[in-house]
Image (cartoon, rainbow over all chains, first blue to last red; front, side):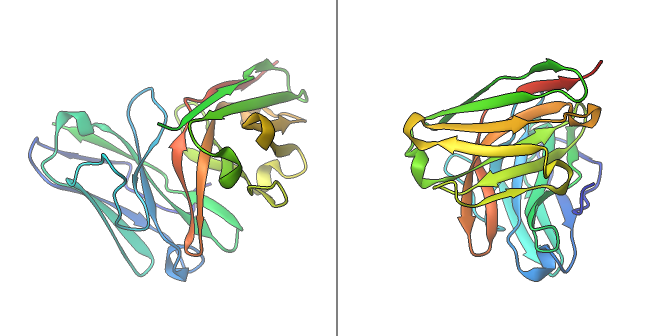
Length: 111
Length: 121
């Protein structure tokens, strides 16, 4: 079972800004471990989108941004585009489980 | 660009075994942590196992401890996952992923395309 909680779905019109929350606890995000985000397009493997809370790998548009505060983190997508329709997952490390943990996943729909 | 290609998936009966392989290329395999992550059909991602560069440290999610073994052959640029005593709930796409280990945590910067494991009678 996932220990990081995300909303099941978010939606927005093209050009709008949407945010996805990722809520953890004192043994993962709240313990100071970084949060990372992945994008999974339909039928494909996940792809790293944000690492170290707010860093974008080369090639990821600056429309994607990440932040972290306390026991939570957020992914923001500004200027929403049709190609952003995908599932998004947050991920961190959990000290009580001694391993990586993923969020429950959020499906982004472009209206 | 980094390339990871999994193989070895298939249909297996409950209680059976399967060995997954991941062929890595276009990066210095021996200098990176490596991992397996799985995704059950229509479900989310679940970390399965990590292995350090020299193979001396290995970590597993509780649900596979004692049944799965992660290993690597740096001379062959290959990662493996030996899966024994398979259960129906192990049915999933299994992804090989390159790991980035830092003091503030661990993340997966490149992923393979996945190989499907189906456990069913």
